Length: 69
Image 1 (cartoon, rainbow, N blue to C red):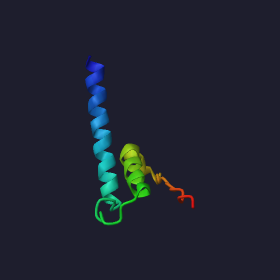
Image 2: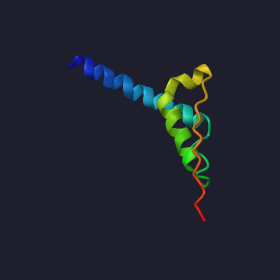
Image 3: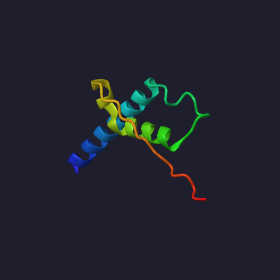
Image 4: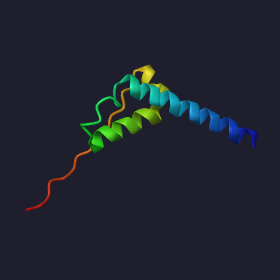
């Protein structure tokens, strides 16, 4: 049981650091321009967490197909 609680603490710290990394990149400032690509980039940045400070720049490209005629 102790291993689970240590893992949970590490996970929470990891996600907090990821949120700080996303905030440092300014992802939370401009909420007017929302898209699935921007939301995906924010989620990946939070999940990647501390890896951002090592120079990794996660981004997701989300292409939405055009409707057929």
